[in-house]
Length: 101
Length: 493
Image: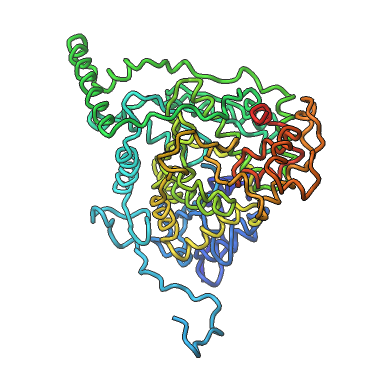
């Protein structure tokens, strides 16, 4: 049983276009049976924040190749990627590397 | 590998064995002390400081080992606002302000090309973007130039002519140049030290630079509406996104080179990253530009003669660039591009990007393998050293023509003759030439003499004859002829 969590989700590098241009979101995740991890967070974002073009952000159960995920300013590869368990006040940053040059 | 009886009915996609993932509890692979923040390549975890050293070192090493940029040379930095070129500008900024032994020694200027018209941006959005750009440009302290894409209409035809061959001197020239530059600086420092001993050598250098940062250029107001409309029409008449992207790139390149020539820059630096160049290599193969891969993706591109394009970021992956920019607060401005939000199959560029990146996610050495392959590509002259006359060049991309103009037997020859039957563009027709091709379809392929006559009668064919294969294929997707590109029609005559 996971308590509600408050996390900061930020979108940069062009991903924000899919979220109506809003870069920073203060998100309160409701309490639920399973603990919150990045996998669940992505599903939650898809259902609650994503305005359009899901396939440009999520592919399968992970982010689209080319989108970096930083958790508290660290590469998510160091923290278990999709399996990382969210903590209260974590900052999750999604940066698209595909835009611009 | 393949065996009789092996069961292919199993899971459709066999996952590669995953390498053990570095975790936060491990230490930085370099210094063995710091807490790692980023994973580079396949499993190397770096801490913040080691990552910075690694990143900066790659940039300096790329410039240093190629020895193309001479001390005091004027170099134009092509900045798009995006992460890679912003990172490049930042590296140059930091490199110029370092202590004297390791300081970069060239004189930069920055150019931003406003491509809002190609992306369909409204004038208000364009003005807003320009304000953001101007702010960043001014903060660098370099002379800067802000040019709208509409300026292509003011390009002289000389832009499409390859200038006299470049400045690659003998082997020792670089070392000599650096030594004499250093001697000069020591002499100046010695004089300066008598007057103002407290000024650090670095500041002394900057004060003596002959360019004036106030000599920056920006258009007084928005470009003429007629030009904007003509360019919008031009891009609107292009049938495929692939051709649009190629057209935009061609126009942008010519504009950048023109600005470089006008202001005396002998080098242009672009921010193409490793990932982008790997994608570009594969894309260009698909576009029929296989003959020019070495120029399109190599460190230096001397096809234009007097101005050389260099790519100092070509060893940095997009992931490294994005991390560096985030960790060290490099300013960049996001602008929508021509392919923003386009679906995956919208163009060859997008398709190839998706292909490479998806492959990279499963096989993390994909991009570096393609990159290493591109490093092995050699720029061989077409006719060998014995060629006395300059080989003909493509009108649009300036590469040596890769096609046999007398080729009539292949399907490609048929394609070309089909193009010559096309209605030539209105502006060219107005120039007084008859629009009637002198040969009936099918006959045009047969004789060289017939083709010569066709050239005189049909300016459309004349232009096409001077294009390389890749550019010809793109031309097919353009509307009724290159109506918006007067440089091409003038030069083609």
